[in-house]
Every structure is written in C-alpha cells, then in structure tokens.
Image (cartoon, rainbow, N blue to C red; front, top):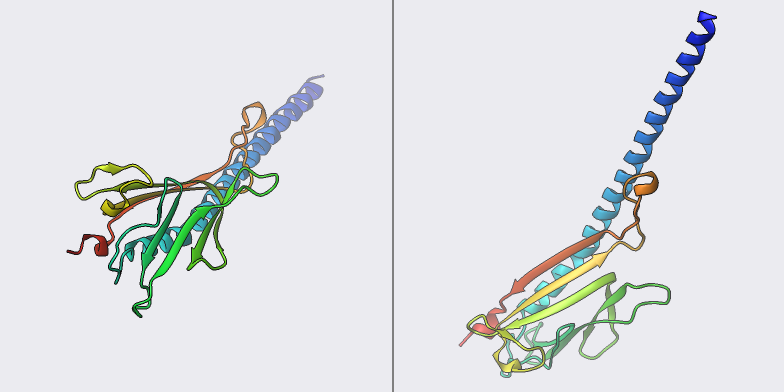
Length: 191
C-alpha cells in the first residue's frame, strides 16, 4: 500500500513540475515575441526619422522666400534646393488613408509634386508643431513666415498584436515606437 501512495505522489509531483515548465515556456515565448516585435518596430522607425530630419534641416536652403507652402498639424511641405542648382524643390509629407481592414496609416513623401513614395507603414500618428524665433508655438497653417523650428512626433505600431502574460491575464496589444525631435533648420535662422 505504501508503494502505491509513493507512485501516486511522485506522479502528482511530476505533473506539477511539467506544468511549471510549460508555464515558463509559454511566458518566455510571449516575452520573445514582444521583444522581437519591439525591435522590428524600432527598426521601422529609423529610416523615416532620418529622412524627415534630413529634409527638414534643409528647409529654406538657397531660397529667397523661406516659407512653408503647407504647415499643418499632420502634413508639411518645405521648399529647398537640394542640388544647389537654383531651382526650388518641394518636399511634401503626409499621411494617407488607412488600408482596408487596418487602423494604421501610411506615411508618404512626395518630391516636386511627383509620385508619392511610401516612407513608412503602420503609422499610428504623425504630428508637426511649429515654433517662432522666441520658441512660441505657432498655430498650424498660420504665420508660416515666422516658422523657425519644427517639432516632429512619429508613432509607428507593430502590424500585429502580441500577447502579454499567459492564461486569463493575456491581453493582446500593439507594440509602439515613438520618435520625437525638434529640428532647427539653419537656413530659416540665417539673416
């Protein structure tokens, strides 16, 4: 009789050990999926951030009229002379509509009114804030002659939700990457 109790007890202990190991495995897999999604989203943010920064830094370069044709909260157009040939180029950034079945939008870059280039997908938000010489916030679309710096905030989400936790406390969510920078185009400050 004592042998049977030992066998049943050891089977229960082995079962508990197996459940603990399975629980640990599921937790590690969820953590790996979230870390992977976070790394992918951060990587997807690098190129758009660099392109936007480079373009906005050149705003007004070699231009007599240093204004912004469009200066809205979610859209901007700059005039510059990238190739120093005396001919103005315009660069337009805007968010397109969300594709069917998605809440994410697409960030487009358009050069000289040509075909729009898809700069980033899975964009949650893009916000431009404009500041004057004294650092006072300018209302989007107004006083474009006084813009001296631009704050850009870009939020990109993962294209699929990842689970957090296990069992009943598992809550799927999108992983987000935030990028924000205030850019001071030298050409707008030149006297």
